[in-house]
Length: 296
Length: 307
Image 1 (cartoon, rainbow over the protein chains, first blue to last red):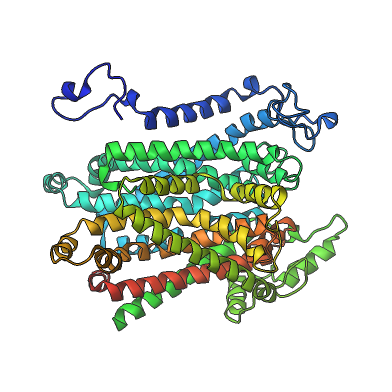
Image 2: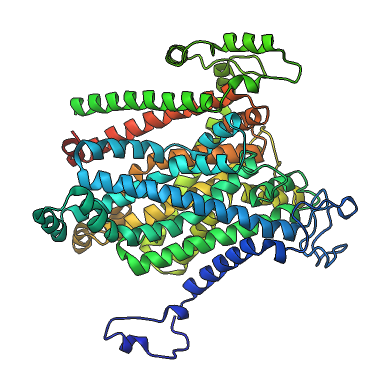
């Protein structure tokens, strides 16, 4: 893996093996993709050549520019009602990104609090919370989302609520395991001897020490949330049209798959790239911060 | 052991009550369920009749009691659109979902175990890297998109396999393949890592020192112990199976319960969706219960820890 070495970090690090993080491709590429996603989401109105909902009936089903009949005016072609695919892909970043941020903020907070409570307090609290966690982990979120879409109606906040409802469970499971180990550590015992209250111990002593696995988990769940939102939108239980969500774009293309494959292809590739980036970055962080969690 | 099972059974029962309350409230939290029945021509009287018909004029606890009583009789209510018992509609579609889910499950598990073990024994070789790549792709690409692209390639372009519906063996190929591609990666990673752990252990070294052939060491001694870790994730695999079924059935117009729930979503037929969700909830509880008991049976430590 050795590439051009500007500084020999192996020696600078005082014998500890260290490489400049900027030399690692598994770090740069995912960060670049995610950075691009953020840029796309924030500057969508400036970057997109057309508004996401601009219909143009004479430009229906135009192929991408590199094919016969394609024009550079619509680089990735148009859909069945003449909307520009590229513009919709760019606007789609707004939905994917904002939903991931909100859902992760909610689920990580709930999961961390419940995980620390279960791990530190132990006993009946632990047994009860872990039962609930087990059941939540084995319940398909997609069904809850469909049930909510049918009763409340599909929409942005329905998606957020539906994914959050079960999404806290993996966090609780992970953090509980960490808290359980920390509870037995010397510094927690000392804090207890000094007379620190359980709340103080949990907040000041346990919490800072579960941050590493928490950050890894947060990164890894970006992909999960984006995939779930896309699947829900694909099924019609997510973001309703005319909003541009990558999932409902793939769905729009399902009917035209034999004639206009580009309608489904491009949004799907973008979903794959972003999820890949999130997963790679998460794996990279896990290797750096917590090698014990390493899986593959 | 008997006490352990009784405690677990009681817990599962309590959990069932919890979930039923949650689903009951979720449906009512939407505000007024009569809104779902209303047409622009409905009069106040019609709405009042609907309310009485659904039992919505009764107090909440009584409504819940009726809901539970019906549930205990296997009565999930009637579909608003089809005017038929939801239980019948689900039972009609269930075999299709089971055949799809089971075959995908078997295909993905066989592949996951076979490839996972091979990858673990040839760590960092080309096979290991290839398997890793496959797993990474399977976890990143959206299942519904992979399914549509499979249709594009195999049904539209090459016209080998049908794009939708049920029928003969060929109808199974694309749905099962895409669903297995979605299910396999998680299991594959787990098998590979637990196999690596086991291969590193003392008793495997011992078996090798004894001079046992490598084939026996891996497929008998190591495999048996590497099986325990994947067993604990049975619950999560079930969730993935349902998710996979809902998505795959919809892409391939497969007449199972996943497709049923989306048809019901489109026509806003909430009793059907509620029925499917409840049925899955019961299945989730049963599977968790079974895994717990099985696991306690395999590993006695757990029995005593969690009394």
